[in-house]
Image (tube, rainbow over all chains, first blue to last red; front, side):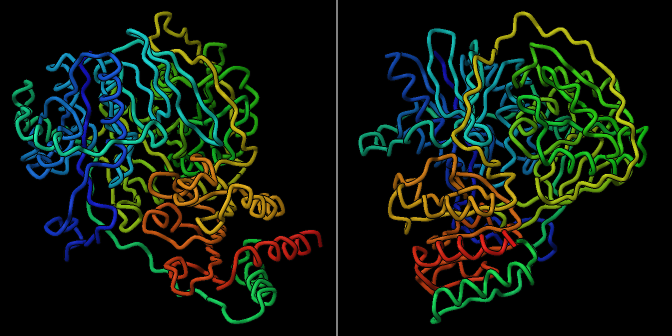
Length: 263
Length: 324
C-alpha cells in the first residue's frame, strides 16, 4: 500500500499574528511554523497502517515554500519513508483549489492507494484541500475521521458530525481521509528516528514536474484574500470579586437579563 | 443573480439555522424568482413548506431512499443537478458538517470559488466579497471570489438573522436523480449521539467546564445549569484530556468553534486554544477562582469565585427568573 500524507505548515498557535501596515497581508518574518496539528494525526494513522500491514510506503508531501522542509523532516523522523516538497514559488497564497490541483497531480504521479490529511488547517480553518483532491481524482472521501479500519481495498470509516452523531461509511480505495483528533495519538520522533530522517530521501519538485503550468494555475485562481482586519475590540467586561458569591451571581443574572438581554 | 441555498436536514428535520442561510441567499439574489432552495433526503418534501416566505419561489426536492443519509458523492451530484436546473451562480449553505463537506467537492468539480464560514457577505457585481475569521480568530480576512463560473459560500451559524418577509412561494420542483449504482462510498449507518441538545456549533447557549471541574461526575452541576437554560454543555481541552468530558464536547482549537449568544465558562482559565473556539460568543460569563485568569480579559461579566459555589446559585436564580 502506498500512502501519501498531505502536510501543511501553519503558524504556531501561540504566534502573534501581525497585519502589515497596509492591511494587505500577514507579516510572516517572525512566524514560527509547525506541522498543522491535524496533519500529525494523518501521519500517525499512515504509520500505523503500514506497521500493521508489515509493508508499504508512507510519503509525506507539501506544497509550500522552503520553510516546510524541516517539518517534512520531522515527519520523516516520526517514521515516514520519503518526503516530497513541491515548491510554491510564484503561487504563494494561492487558493485551496489551486493547491488541490497541484497535490492531486502529485498523488497521480505517486500512484498512491490512499491519501491521508488533517481534517482542516488551523490557519484558515477552511477544510478544503483534502476534499478537493478527492474530487479532482474522482475518489471518494471521508473527512473528520475518528476511526479507520482497512480490510484489503475496503475501508470502514467513522465520521464525527453534530451532536456527537457518527456516520459510518464503507469506502473502496483509493480514497482520501481527513483525520480528526480522536483518531489516534501521534507519536514523538525517537532519537534514532531523528538520525535516520537525515538520510531519508526528500525530493524537491515544481508544479511543472507534474505537467502543470504555473502561469495557467495562477490565472485560474477563483478565490483570493484581499486583506486583513483586526477583530472588533470588545469593551472591557465587568468583573466582580470579594463579595458574597450569591450577591455576585445575582448581579450577573440581572445584567444578563437587563443589559445584555440574552436571558 | 441566480442563487441556490442548500438546506441541510437530518431525519427529515431541517437545521434550525437553515433559514439564516436562506435569508442571506434572498439578500444576494435580489428577488424571489432568482432564489431557489434545494432539499435532499428521504421523505423531505414537507420541509419546503417551512421555507415559504423566506424569499425563494422554487424549492428543488431530491427525495429518494438512496439519499436518506448524507454521502459526499451522491449529495454533490444532487446539489450539482439543482445548480444546473436553476442556473445558479452562487450557492449558499450553513457552515455546518454537511455543507462544509460537500461544497469543497462541488467547487473542485465546477472549478468555482469558495468562501467558508463567513461572518459577512455581499455581492459585488458577479463576485462575492466576504469576511471570515482566521488564525484562531486573531484576525479577520477579507475574502473574495473572482472569475468564478459559480461560487460557494457557507455562513457561520447564529450571525445572520433569519427573516420571513412574506415573499417567495417555495413551490416544490422535484428533481429525479438516479444515484450511481457503483458508488465507491456507502453509508452503513448513522449512530445517534448521546446528546439531545443542539450541537455546540449551533447552540444559542453554552455552559462549559474546565480542568477545575475535577471529575466527570462534577459535570452534572453544569448539566443542571444547562437544563434550566436549555443550553448545551461544552468543555475545555484540559477537561477532555483529563477524561472529565467526551471529545465531541470540546470547544477550542482541536475541538469546535462556537458562536452562542451566551457562553458561561466555569473553571476555565482561557488558554489561547480555548479562546480560539469561543471568542466570538456574543456574551461571555466567566467564573474562576483566579482573578488573573486570561478568560476574564474576554469576559463580558466575570465572577471571581469557586464554580462549585456559583454554578448551583446560577441554576436557582435562572430557574426563578425563567419561571416568572
